[in-house]
Amino acid sequence: EYQGGGFSISNLGMYSIKSFYAIINPPQSCILSIGNTRETPMFDKNGNVIKKHVMNISLSCDHRVVDGATGAIFLNTLKEFIENPSLMICY
Image: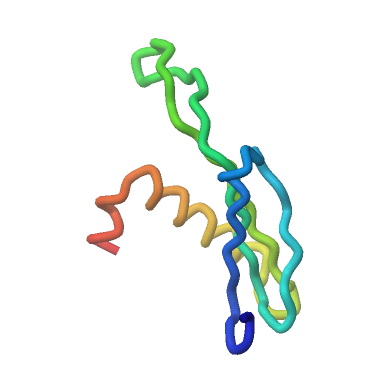
């Protein structure tokens, strides 16, 4: 099942898990952990309280293969794509 892969995605959101840290499946170098989405009160640009859907994600990396800073850049890019899907067209 993991043969030949370098990256896994583990989604436990359907079990109402808010967040978790997944263990890398050797010989892969990274695994992305996805929690559930939930409504959370946040402030909009005008200071009004609004409901927003939020989701926790985390990335575990084998630092022999992937530098932590590179992983952080990947997570930030993924966040931007999730929040603004139209950005994927321009990327």
